[in-house]
Amino acid sequence: MSLPDWNTICAAVWRAKRAQLKPITRLDPIRLAQLVGIEHQKQQLLDNTRRFLRGERANHALLWGARGTGKSSLIRALLNEFSGDGLRCIEVSLQDLDDLPEILDLLDNAPAQNYRFILFCDDLSFEQGDGRYKHLKTVLAGSLELPPDNVLLYATSNRRHLLPENAGDNVHTRVVGNELHHGDAVEEVLSLADRFGLWLSFYPADWETYLQIVDSYFADYRGDREQLHATARQFAMLRANHSGRTAEQFFLGFSRDN
Image 1 (cartoon, rainbow, N blue to C red):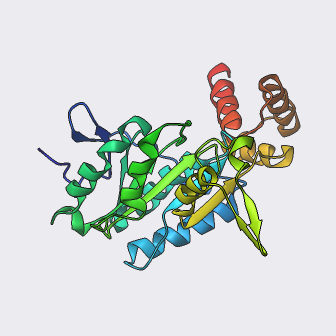
Image 2: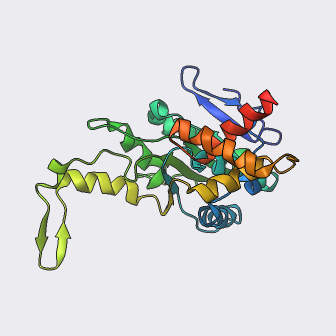
C-alpha cells in the first residue's frame, strides 16, 4: 500500500473501500484568529496540542455541544497552525471505526514516527446496540498492545457521552453509603466518554457574540455597520439559529449578492 508523503502532505482521509489513506490537497484555510467567542476552548486545545507536539503527556479530546459552534473548525485551524511543527491529521468517519487498528499500524512505522498525528472523528455519536464505539478503545486505552505514542484522538459530538442516555438506564443505579453506583448500562456510557482526558463544552452563541463573529467576517466592510448587524440578525432569526456557522452563511450570501 502506498502511503502519503508526510513531508509534503498535512492531512489524509481514510477510504475504507480501498483500505488506504487518501491525501487531502485542498485544506480548509481557516485560522485560529477567525474563531470568535470560544477563547477558553481554543486555549485549552492549543495547550494540549503543544504538549503533544513536544512529546509530553497529552489528552485525547472530546469537543461536544451545540451545532455550528466551531468544534470542527477549531480542529482544522489547529492543523493550519501547527502543520509546520510536524502536526498531521487523519479523518476517520463513524462508519469506518472498525478500521482503527489498521490505521494505527500504518502510523507505527519509521516515516510516520517523525510526525504527530491527530485522528479526527467528526460528529461522533452512537445509537443503542451500536458496537462500533468499542473500537475507539483501541486508540483511547489500548488493549494488550498500547497505541502509538505519536497519535491522539480528537472527536466532536453533539452528545456529551456519545451514546444516548435513557431514563430506564438508571433503574439499577443505587447509593451505597455515600457513593453512587450506576447500573451497567450507565457505566458503559460513561466509560467511553471518561477515556477522553479533555472535555470541551461548546454552547450556543448569544447575540453579542454572534455579531462579533459577523464583524470578524466583515472586517473590511465600509458600509453602515448598524444596518449590517440588523440584516445579520434578521438572517439568523429566519433560521432560528445565531451560531458561528450562521454568521458564515450570512457572509457568503451577502458577499454573493453585493
